Length: 71
Image (tube, rainbow, N blue to C red):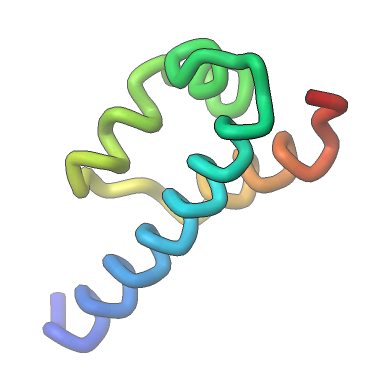
């Protein structure tokens, strides 16, 4: 993977993580429950914080969950 693409993906993941953390701050959900209901992966938030790869489709799915959630 090229350095520019890698940097872009890291930046996009950081923006996504910021969105997730803001959602969790205003929600009564735990990280693991959020990951499970939003993506089917209870380890989602932990893995993103560790800098692990997240697929664009998963980001879209989680953002849709946050957008449509009644919290």
